[in-house]
Structure formats: C-alpha cells, structure tokens
Image (cartoon, rainbow, N blue to C red; front, side):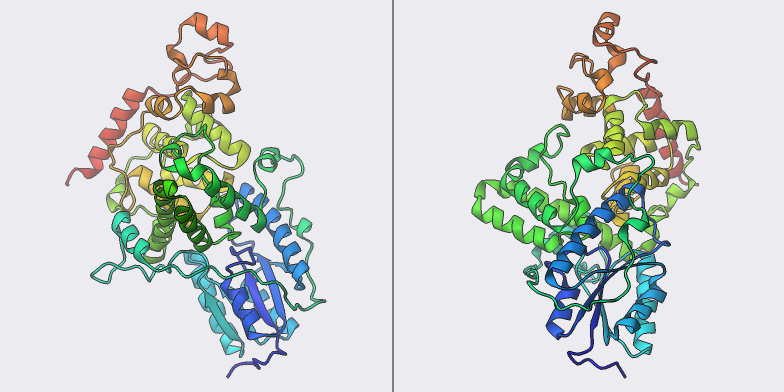
Length: 481
C-alpha cells in the first residue's frame, strides 16, 4: 500500500550529483505527475569530499538554488544521514512520493537500496531514474551476455545504441514554501582562513548555465582540431567539462546530442567529434567496471599486482604532490592541479606514471591525492584511470609502458609553454633545455636565473635507473611460482 498519489500530495526530489534542471528525469517525472515539488539536497558527512570538490559543490548549489527559486520551488538544504533525513523531510512535507536519479558507487547503491525499501515500507512511492550515464551499466553487454572487460568492444556496443533526446528544462515549478532549510555558508565548503582557492575562482565558474556555455564554446571552436590538439597541454583544446559532468550540471546525453548536432552542422569537425565522444564513452566504461566489479575502486583488478613491491616513501610522495620532482612536465602538472583543481589529461597520465613507475608508490595514494585536489574528482573515472596507468586495471596500459617525462614533455609541450606557465622559475630557460634543465650549460642556467637544487629541484630519480627498477619489479610479479 502506498501513500496518496493525488496531485495534492507533494513529491520530494532528492538532488545528488544531478545539479541541473534540464535533462533531469527525476525532476521531470515529478512535474509530470503533478503536485508540489520539494527539491532537497543533503550533505552527507559520511561521503568523502575533497577540498576542491567541496569548493565546487558550494558554487553549484548556489546556482541550482537560484534556478529553482526562480521557477518557484526553493531548494531545501540539510546535512546528515540521508537514510534518516529523507523520510523525515518527506513526512514534514506531507509528501506521497520520493524521486531521485541513480548513483553507482558501491556505498551509494547499498544506501539507496536500503532507503528505497524503508520508504516503501512506510507507504511512500519511490522511483529512481537514469541521469548520470549514456547507458545504464547493466544495459551494455557482450554477445555472451556478460559485462565488458575491454574498452574498445564496449565502446563499439555503446556507440551503436540509440541515445534518447535530452529532456527540456522546466519553465515553472510549484514548490512548497516554509520547510526548514540550512544556510549553505554554514557548511563551510569553501576555505576562508586561509582562502587557498583563489586559483579555482580564477579558473572555474560552477553551475548549469556555465556548463552549457562551456560546451557551446568548445563545439564552436576547439572541436575541429580536438583529435590532434587534445594532447597539447598548453593549448585550450579540451572541453574541460569533467567537473560539470561530475556534479551533473550537464548530462552526458546533452553533451552527446550537442556534439552530434555539431558534426552535422560542421562536417569538417567529424573526426574531432568522434574522438571527443570516445572520451565520453570511457567515462561510461569506468562506471561499467565499478558497477560490475565494485572492488576495482580499492583493489587491484589484476590479482598479481597484490604482490607488487610498492615503496612506502612519504618524503618522495610529498615532493610529487608539491611539484618538486625535478622533471618539469610532472612538476608543472602538479602545480596546475594545486592551483586550479585541474590537470590536463595527458599530463595526468605522465604524472601518475611517474608516481607509480619511477617512484614505485602505490596507485591508491595517488588516486586519493587526486580526489582531494581535483574539482572533477570522480571515483569511478579516477580509480579506473589510475589502474590503467599502473597496469593493474582492466584493459590497462602494458606494464612495461613507462613514460619518459623528458620525451613526453618535448613531444607534447615542444616550446615549453605549459611548463613556463606553471613553473615561473624556469620561464627564462631555452626551449632546448626546458624539459631537462640539468642538461643545460651553467651559463644558460645562470642567464635564465635557474639554480638547480635551489629555486628548482634536481631530478629525484634517474629515469633510466628508475625504469630498470620498475621493469624488474613488474617482471618479479609476473614470474610463475
């Protein structure tokens, strides 16, 4: 037996990582059913939230709250355990139903199942909807009706699917006024003493409107050269949509639809659109893996890596986090991350490879650091990507692929523009030496104002020796017996 479902009974819509009005299935279903809509967001202290992510969430909630209020349904803010608060708010509102969009992290699935059962037992109508991915993790299957373990066939299957058209944003809501709501500022999501987020303020503007603006700008400009330029960190050639996607300020189906329209309107952008959509498919693949093998977020996908001889070296890890490894492309990436909450994807791979293969530090430590400092700290994507780099994951890079940070820098940042932007102490160095300052003649260093071991670190490891050490460690765990 359920509670009354007449138009008089309000519907509670629980926002999580779907902080938008357009293409929001839970919100659209509540509006379609009729009655008052009660939008709710709960800050769950049990859910890990890095400093950069917390900063972003504050801005996103400001934008969402303003949009909902403008349409006539104020956002109710509470903090605490959703298992207790959702039924409590629903009763306060006299709601007959509770709607939300699905999440796929292992802890979220367990919590939502239990909450759905408890609400149903208390005679609430409960519905959940698909809003986060291009396809639900259980919808994309192999010919043998099993989950995919390799990205390319997964992508082939996903890209053949018919993507539903995005839902339009509502133009009006009828909300319930008077429910108690907490003050967002009291949650202290943004730093004050000290305010270390100046770089984030300069680099980002959270919110649904900004997400749409960023997508439109990318499709109008950078998409044409995306296939080639996306690996060049000094060029503004990527969409930078990942934090907007993570917080659900824009849906992947909105992105897909707009990208397909761009390809039709601008046939010359077709190859760029294809490369871009493939990256969106990798995001779905990461969630697919996490849903079917939830242990992938904490354990090695390949069990032989359980015997890998990781180094416990806090001093080396600290130098990596601070961008003091002595390898400019790595250090520039880590400084960009600290300042802006973001790192170019090519540089993420180089920096991650350096940690796990040059320093032999467990990929999980690197993943945790990224989750604390990235504005797009997405558990599924971050963990799958780190395991890919380490060689321990599904469809991972070969264990013997060890990026040479000098060659990577010279290939993808040839004139050193990216390094100069984030390592001002090297800005005056000739391009011949920008990625290997230790090879510069003393007079070149002096002229550029570079003091190795002074204002810029000497390399903390020798690449050739570190590579040999890593290969020996990988070979040891692959040796039978």
